[in-house]
Image (cartoon, rainbow, N blue to C red; front, side, top):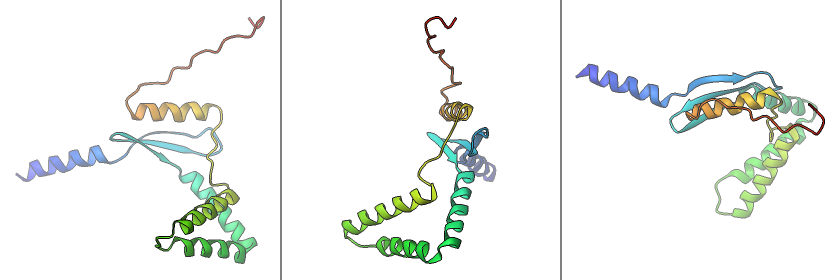
Length: 140
C-alpha cells in the first residue's frame, strides 16, 4: 500500500512542479521558461535583481524620498473598503515602478524568438517556424 502512495506522490510532484524548458540569454535580461500543467512560468530573476539594485541606488541618493513613497503606498494598502484609496495606491505603485524601470521587460532580436519558442513549446504547440517576409521590389 505504501508503494502506491509513493507512486501517487511522485506523479503529483512531476505534474505540478515547473519543468525548466530553457532560457533566452542573448538579450539585456535573461528569461527562463518552465512548463506547468496548463501553462508556463516566466522566471524573471535577472530583471528583479536589476529592479532591486535600482531601488537601492535611489534609496542611497534620496532615502527620505523613497521612504516617503513606500510609506504612502503602505498606508494606502491597509485593508479598507475605500476604493478611492486603492485606486490612488495603484497609481502610486505604477509611478514608483516607472521610476525604477520595472514596468517593462525588454527583449531584443533572437531573444524574442527564443522566448516565443519556449512559451509555445510549454503548451505542446511545437517549434516556431519563421515565415519569410516579402522582398522589396528589385531586392533579389
